[in-house]
Image (cartoon, rainbow over the protein chains, first blue to last red):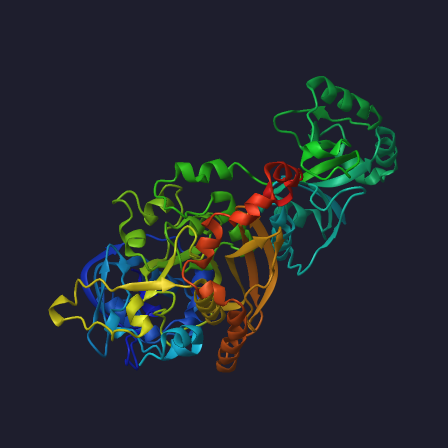
Length: 143
Length: 474
């Protein structure tokens, strides 16, 4: 899992109000080289949560990113290289993502985060009653 | 300028849609003007298309999968005499630059719906003596290729209705599809395959419909073995995939046979992310939106593979409360999943796409339809953020087809639209309650035909009914 993915994910467990950012538990970090694409990075920059990226990179052992960043810094190749490295080249191969509210661990094995919820963590079917009234008509209301 | 666009005679419904998508990608053109040559049926491989420049025409043709060639048409006619007249009256200043003595050229004789012997081909080339070729012949690597193409007038054999009359075309090749891609990427040489891996040709077509280009971020929420993302990565995109099946996405069949290895096999950039997630409960952080340039997928619709989502079947029926996982079992617990109906799956997909696609981004996915009397009901899913710009049918059996839908995001995703989408989809769902029935599509596709119907139509009648014209079956 790259930190780009980490920056997109949150814990969507029932009742969790703010499941972002997920804390990273590191067992094994790999570095894999990725082609440098400045345009891709510039496009992505405004959509990222910068602080979460800085903290995550630090957890993974990379402390080169500045605490704050703005779009002007995207002109500097040096900054882009660091940004690129943190966002795309650091891999969490083994470890876990931890929900900041409940402490629930989403395991990361072979680089794949497992974000599937357990039965008792799935948000109530309230949303499904809106989306799928037919199911509810047929099977009765689910509390 | 009008160009002759000749297609490979397959996936008929996909041909114009592909060229239109590529015209948008290379020329920023939102629509294209098409014409049919005289006496040609719409299913004919010969079409005329109006493109702003040869450069755009070349880029479209070279990137496409179904364009055999785009040609500058020097002449056409229903007889060789007519063709000669047409070529002679084509402006000289358009012809001369390609006929000069410092160029090399070759002439290719091609036919549709019939074979031309080597002798006939030579005769055709010799008959072109009225064109003042000054250049040298180079069969391997010519500067200019000229194509002499003819269709014959004895209909039925060429897969088209027998209304087609003989038509002859002569033109200069501008560009054509690189079909060498297909053997390179064909599924039988792919290391990691699943039962629903997407055929390479179709995956490339999907990538073209989605305007995949270098630096774009492409997402597949039902990634499986990654067969769609492989095509997207070939065109330079950054790819991201999710699947609810952890075995498909993480384990594969071993360290050298998994989704990653499918990318390494072709030397492609590895996916930016692969994760296990449920399309009905996407784990994206609140506030994250408009990040993907395209979403391309083949949703599970329950014929070859059924969809799954979080929550057991009994749980959803409200018979039991949610299973409480004991604390000591939490780490390795494997949550149960429930069947995911097509209607709900598509609803979730549209909602996700409306939120996560950038403005102008494209959602490209397959949607199954039952075929009754060869008429396909085209009530496709709708969403206020999206405009449907192409629907291309591929017939899979006499019972059902799949339709490749291309939707473009035209409106931003507001709370109001999210709410409106639910209401709109409600309407769609009420007419499609049959989709919600478990395995309905599956049984419609696989159950034996109605016994009475079989008796009524005896075998003789069946033979008569069997259409000679194959149309979209090719």
